[in-house]
Image (cartoon, rainbow, N blue to C red):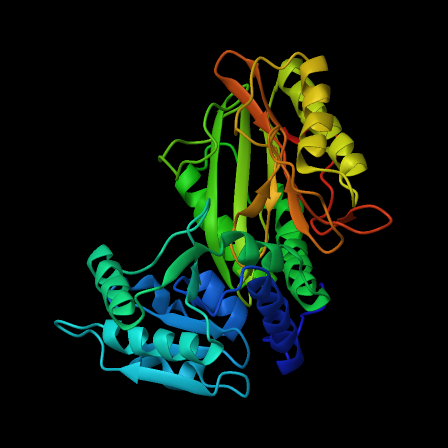
Length: 395
């Protein structure tokens, strides 16, 4: 069993994150940074709760140009967010019929901007972000801010936030490694509970139970597919179909521990799987090997993509299946950057990535393979346990 990491983070970890984001804010002359989403608020405050599943209440954290973050949250969450690092928490009774925290948030942002002597607010606007509040409230907030500060400027803080969150601390990496090892254990013994004749719904359910027993907190993401001599879908829930001889099965899962995800898949065969499917599995495995060699500090994401893509083209790939060959990983199942031909982000030590080459190897048949790694100076460290090069087959 892998060693269980400590839960939570030290105050010094949050202080380091705050210094990093405030340094980024300085480059854009931001007087305040507004956070509205679960992942960003968790990262900078440590507030971890499944209460985010409810869309009823909005949550906000304001980061000033200097000083500690300020929580602007519903009263129900004050005790859960309060910590040595989060001491300034302002609240209102939510849900509210006409003003669900908007006026309190506007007052807080204007106060922070005035103290910084800046008229510039940063907020996420870019790719892979959203603002988690009703559009009516966004418009009301902006009207209140501009009424109190006519010279207000609102800049896109996405690059600043992503630059900080892309680089993982060793404490973050420990959590991802742990959950990836737990799931690796389950993948390696899948044939002990997966049988021909079993419905995919029962198999999904059993896999979830096994992961929970292995030590993960949640099985937040579990998709897959199976078909005769190959599959044509990798993102669907169970359909009720029963496994049969000559099926090829993929399971792709994102399990969590203490708020951090693993994300990788494994392929399996049952009965008389043909050589074409076996060759495709070897091809995506070899492509991952090429990705591992290319995933070093200083290379771009596009270079890692190209290394894997060349292997698949030489193997006779009929097309790409997932649009990219991997992505960042951490608090979210998928994070920036993406391994695509257009992504020129430079890999740095401490980035946690997935390598996920995929190919169409016959009409209506695809093969996808995925591993989790952390970028190190001496070469990538595998966080998931490396899959075997040969497609595992159960007779």
